[in-house]
Length: 237
Image 1 (cartoon, rainbow, N blue to C red):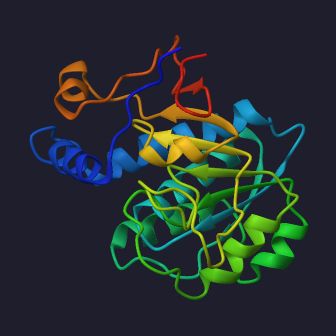
Image 2 (image 1 turned 90 degrees about the vertical axis):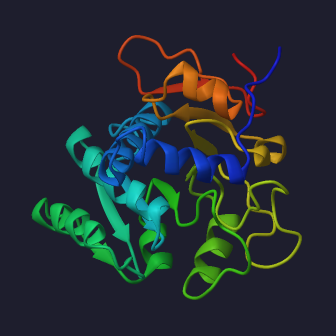
């Protein structure tokens, strides 16, 4: 069966710009919708009755913001999230998202490895589609742990350290990293051709006109769902 068309890095960046200009979306709105989709994907994978303890690793950029939003929703869904957020982005948005979690008494940890040992699931919201170059501290050890983990992992938009077009790294901390599940935001990225796990698409706010302009497909969302499960390579199930 034909797969959903993928969205390359230049088109993805241009799409974000258009959504925030002529589309009239704020970054807060886009992050909120992305984080809600991430939380629903995790609920679909494994509800809190099965895997209550979720560790959410957040990077300093928008991918980390998606993780912070997802944590708030997961708390309200009945999970017990713990946050690993060692490098907070400079925007006051990240401080607001952090404060919301602190008001819910969601704990933050500096010890990723210890927290992972007590977790039933991990959300990888470290690096998204804009990642390139080398993995900088303190994330090499974290990504190496994700690659070696027996705890299931849901990656947000891209497995951290993967190149958006060329897939998994040939060397460095992400070698062998193949998360349990991936949620592609708005559309699958070219890296999905190397992905082998369960695959979701989320981000239910784009018009058909915009999808055609940027050359990707809207997945067949059902009812009130914010996510659709598709094949690992982007094919419709």
